[in-house]
Length: 295
Image (tube, rainbow, N blue to C red; front, top):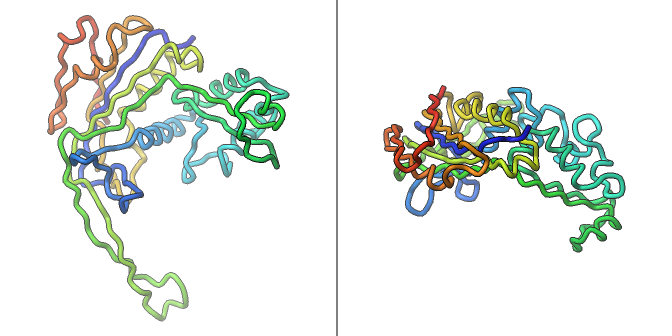
């Protein structure tokens, strides 16, 4: 059974001397907006959710290179794999309809039925097609299947502008040769946010959940993952314990349409620079938030 109630949620997290989400176009400095507020992209948050899903044994289509479990070299290879995916026939418009393939993909992979996915493959040896109509797809053997997921996530933003500290580092080891000569120093930079409180919001839409098969059980899995978002996520940029979820707020509406808009629900939450929060219950009468402590 698909999701029976609209759900809104918010996650309050803290950063302590870590780089929560580096910007590759800016020397991997922590992302900030023009006003100095820290930012963690929704793509980064989804990556962490997918990693936690994989640790729970859930099927995940978009696997990172350093955590992939099936050895597939690309998303196309995973999708067309008879063992790990749906098989090539699922993406052959002459043998399988787009609706049937979309249903199979949603049933197999949690992240597809949650976040959606675009499957855009061309036929083997074919040219990149320019026409977008169904007839062109069938003639070329190419396929484009778009799935819109019910779970939407905002980027996370800090409550106050953050201070970004940068240090210069050097690497001085002999990576080649017999080790008798000292290698030349390699200079680099390392960046961090000294301290920051970030908040991100999300929503689960029951109408879209009906199309992908996202269920109440799936919502409970996501609910259990959010407080553990940064477990097993340590790296040089994010040392163990430097990032943590403080609180998760979970609003379950009384019906599929929702008692209030997501914007109104999200605005009822106020977070201060210490990571503490307050809820304006008068803004959403009859709708209470379940507060879940982070781990």
